Amino acid sequence: MARDLMSEEDWMFFEHFILAVRAANGCKPANHRLVLDGIFWISRTGAPWRDLPAEFGKWSSVYRQFRRWTLAGLWEDILEALNQSGAVPSALQMINSTVIRAHHQAAGAKGG
Image (cartoon, rainbow, N blue to C red; front, top):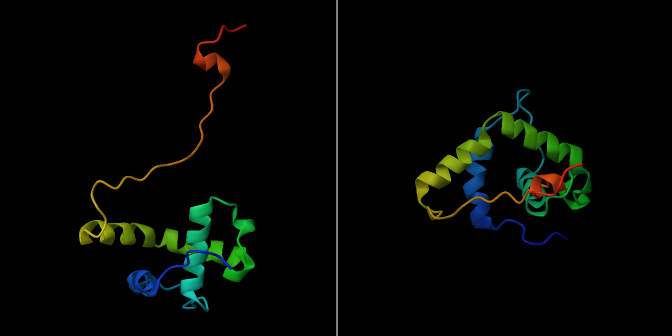
């Protein structure tokens, strides 16, 4: 079982935004909360989509819903609401842990 699944309070916050976004065909996934937990699991671990545990559903379905929500602007709406609510301290910073490597010559080594 995946750890740190979203609390009921967290879900109540996200549910409003998710229910406002409808698929073009009017269908909705069987469990929005489980899909969102899967997306957050991927975000926390940095794992490839194909490594999503089966308890969140098929990785391709979770990814497809993530893509739909991204194209619908859901994540921007959520971040804007968090920013306006004051629930998140203004000193909180987002840090990208991407590793950037340069060729050894970029560090001043003698080139050939």
